[in-house]
Length: 442
Ligand SMILES: *[C@@H]1O[C@H](CO)[C@@H](O)[C@H](O)[C@H]1NC(C)=O
Ligand SMILES: *[C@@H]1O[C@H](CO)[C@@H](O)[C@H](O)[C@H]1NC(C)=O
Ligand SMILES: *[C@@H]1O[C@H](CO)[C@@H](O)[C@H](O)[C@H]1NC(C)=O
Ligand SMILES: *[C@@H]1O[C@H](CO)[C@@H](O)[C@H](O)[C@H]1NC(C)=O
Ligand SMILES: *[C@@H]1O[C@H](CO)[C@@H](O)[C@H](O)[C@H]1NC(C)=O
Ligand SMILES: *[C@@H]1O[C@H](CO)[C@@H](O)[C@H](O)[C@H]1NC(C)=O
Ligand SMILES: *[C@@H]1O[C@H](CO)[C@@H](O)[C@H](O)[C@H]1NC(C)=O
Ligand SMILES: *[C@@H]1O[C@H](CO)[C@@H](O)[C@H](O)[C@H]1NC(C)=O
Image 1 (cartoon, rainbow, N blue to C red):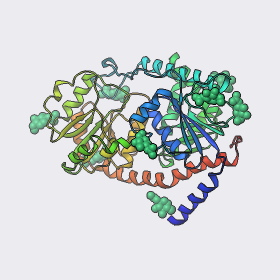
Image 2: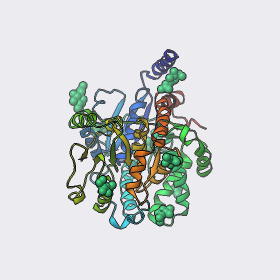
Image 3: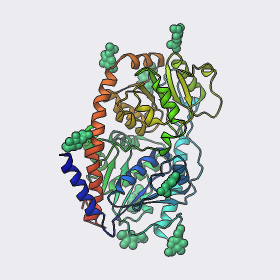
Image 4: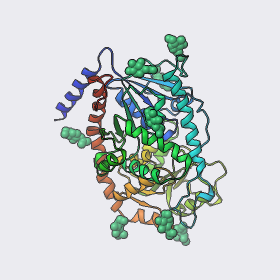
C-alpha cells in the first residue's frame, strides 16, 4: 500500500515538473505568525510547481537570520522575493496592564492600538502591491518575478483590488475555520471603524475567492464548513492542508543541545514549558503572576522582556527552572520530560503541541487566540486559565485525561500530515496544471 502511494506521488510529481512549470504566487503579510505557515506552504507546493514567495523585503533577512531559509538556497522551484513596502520596523504588539483584569485573568480588554498598527502595515503592503501589478514603472521588489502567474495565494485581509483579479485567488486561512466563522459574525456586530476597514476587505475577498486553503484538519473543523459557506456566501472548495510545521535549521545548533541535555536529566512528564508567543509583550505584573504560580515546579520559560524580571524570579533553581530568551520549541515539545505546554493559544504553537501529543494550559490574549482556545478545550486536550493559576497547574499535572486525549489527537495530526494534507497540496498544484489561467471552480 505504501509502495502504491509513493508511486502515486512520484507519478504526480513527474507529470507536474514539466519544462515550463506553472507558477503560484504566495503573498505573506509581515507578521511572524503568518509568514512562517505561508513559507511552509510555499515550500511544500514548490515540490510540485514553481512558486514565488513575496514578503516585505526586510523580513527576508529576519527569516534567513533565524534559519528558515537555509534549506532553500539550491531550490530551482521556489523564489523568495522582497516587496519594498516600507514595513521595515514596526513596533511589537504590547499588552498593557490596563488591558488585563487581574481579578479575572481570562478577560482581556482589546486595544485599538493593535488594530491601528495592523491597518497601517496592511495599507503599506497594498500600496506596493498596487504598484507591482498596475504600473509600468520599476516595480518595488528586490528581484523580478517571472510572469505569468497562474494562481495567487494570499491572506483574506489583503487588499485584493491591488492584485490582478484575472488570476485565480485562493485565500490562505492559517488558523482554524471556527475562528474564521466567529470572526465573520463578530465583524457584523462591531462598531469600531478601524476594525470595519479590515472586515470589509475580509468580507469582500471571501466572496470573490476561488478557493480556501486552511491550515487545520477536516477532522477538527468539518462541523464549521456549512456555517462558513452560509456566512461567506461562497461555496468554493476548502482544502485542509494542516498541520504546516516549520523548522529552523538553527534549532539543533546554539543552545539547543544544552537544553535537550538539561531535559534529559528531568523525570518524565515533570517539566512545564511556557511560551506566550513571539508577538505580544506582557506587562511585568502578568509575568509576576505566572512566576508565583510556577515557583514550586520545574519549567522552561521562553521569555523576552523589555525591563528586568520581577523579583519573584530572583531565586530560580537552575537544575529545575530555566528562563531563556530563545527556545527550540519543537525540540522541547517533543521531549518526554515535558508535562504540558502553557501557551497563549497561537495556532502554530497549538499545532506543534498536538503533533507532539502534549496537553495545553491556554491563556488567550487577543485575536483568534480565543477561538483557538475554545477549539482545543472542546477537543479535550486543554484547560483555560482560571483566576487561580496554582490550581490550574496542579490540575494539569495530576489529571491525565488531557494527555490521554492529546495522544489520540497526535495520531490524527500525524496521519493528516503524511497522507490527507499532502494529497491536498498536490491537488492545489494540479489545479493550475490542468487549467492554467482558468477559474477552477467556475
Ligand atoms: C545555504 O545557506 C546556508 C546559510 O544560509 C549555508 O550555510 C550553506 O552553505 C548554503 N548551502 C549551499 C549549498 O549553498
Ligand atoms: C471572567 O471573564 C469571562 C470572560 O469575560 C467571563 O465569562 C467570566 O464569567 C468571568 N469570571 C469571573 C469570575 O468574573
Ligand atoms: C527587472 O527587469 C527589468 C526589465 O527587464 C530591469 O530593468 C530591472 O532592473 C529588473 N529588476 C530587478 C530588481 O532585477
Ligand atoms: C469589493 O471588490 C470589488 C472588486 O475589486 C470592488 O469593486 C468593490 O469596491 C469592493 N467593495 C468593498 C466594500 O471593498
Ligand atoms: C493579469 O493577468 C492576466 C492573466 O494572467 C494577464 O493576461 C494580464 O496581462 C495581467 N494584467 C496585469 C496588469 O498584470
Ligand atoms: C510551594 O511549596 C511550599 C512548601 O511546600 C508551600 O508552602 C507554598 O505554598 C508553595 N507555593 C506554591 C505557589 O504552590
Ligand atoms: C480530569 O479532567 C477532566 C476534564 O476536565 C474531568 O472531566 C475529570 O473529572 C477530571 N478528573 C479528575 C480525577 O479530576
Ligand atoms: C498513510 O496512508 C497509508 C495508506 O493508507 C497507510 O498505510 C499509512 O499508515 C498512513 N500513514 C499514517 C501516518 O497514518
